Amino acid sequence: MPKAWSDKRERQYEHIKDSLEERGKPEKLAEEIAARTVNKERARAGEAKEASASSLNDISSGRRGGLRSHSGEGGRTKAQLYNEARQKNIAGGSTMSKAELEKAVGQ
Image (tube, helix red, strand yellow):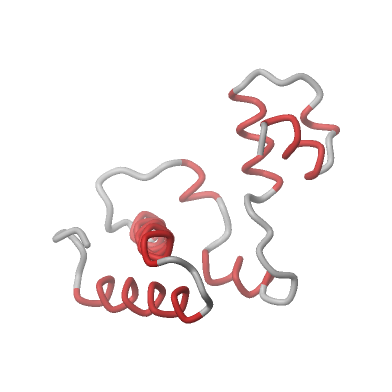
């Protein structure tokens, strides 16, 4: 856990990590997901020195989790897959479905 995090962010990290482990995720994966989630929230709140465009423009992790809570893990969003397809210069990405984008970017 990075030292740059506030006490609030450390508690948030532990809560997310513990929750993921309770749901059967391996410890290393739970730590990675928790750290990424906390770092994204820090970026959205202006607490981080640098922030990626997807951290600032994507919906918040809490809202995203709420939207997906009844459908299981959905992986990356269609927007994230589309952006990756654009970075890899994959033609026709704007007309592809999420499943097609996953296949095209090599999920």
